[in-house]
Figure 1 (cartoon, rainbow, N blue to C red):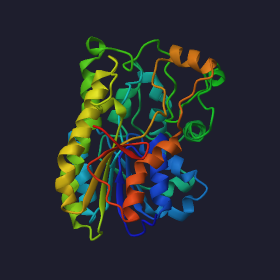
Figure 2: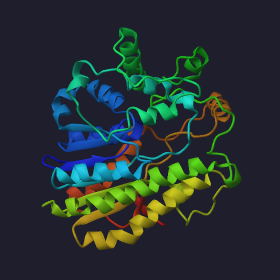
Figure 3: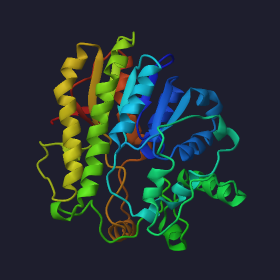
Figure 4: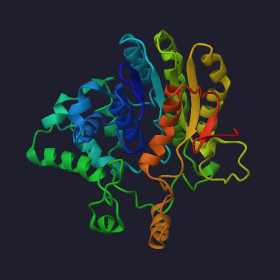
Length: 352
């Protein structure tokens, strides 16, 4: 796949599947803008890649809170003002709302100035992401300064979070027991016995329900709506919109459990956006698909996950597998195949 000369926007590109999608696009030659709630951590992560010098000048990191429609609109307008767009990937999603302390390492790192290669990453902020948003994620009673923290210890800790999160086993049972664990997203693992993945409709807090809709369904709608002219302005034969969805949003699935109804709602809405608008967009050369990444992350509460892990369970796919599924419609399009208006599971069309 050769994406030289193409511009792409990827939401949620800092960590996990999003980071590997970003690397695939950058290594294929695209000029890429990613969004994240933690832009400085994103800069540190990407600068750690061995081949950063090959594509670092084509990466832009935008700090934005996708729960805020005003910020989402501002991002779209910023991207559109820079010229035609070839690729929009709506990847960012909130699945389980973490406890405030889970974000502490990332929150602290946003007040630490960048150093080394990370300083060369192009950065854009929508105004409130690196201050108010992380502050709202901090533990209750914790006082956060919005001033730059230039201490050597703070700098070392911020770098350690980025490095550790990229290492296999960073959230192992041994590291959890030692209090040194961070997951692939840079979060401290939650040790709760219940979370919204297993909760039913009356147990889901209204705030969490609203956050999930805003991030998972409303933001993609706004971005597509505002960026359609920029996509149409591209001279490429094919432009792409990939909505990262999940089987949880599929109606044709025979079994549907009672847990996490709010995330099911959001993904179902994203699927319906795809199904409703794809044919009409195709008339303008825009190929829109919805893609299931496969089972990569176990979202169940800590006690359940640790018990199953001790019995040898692991999710069947890894982050690279998931990213490959997201990029697949673009790979196929660049090879001459028009893939649009479908929900893709394991690289094949699947009933809605």
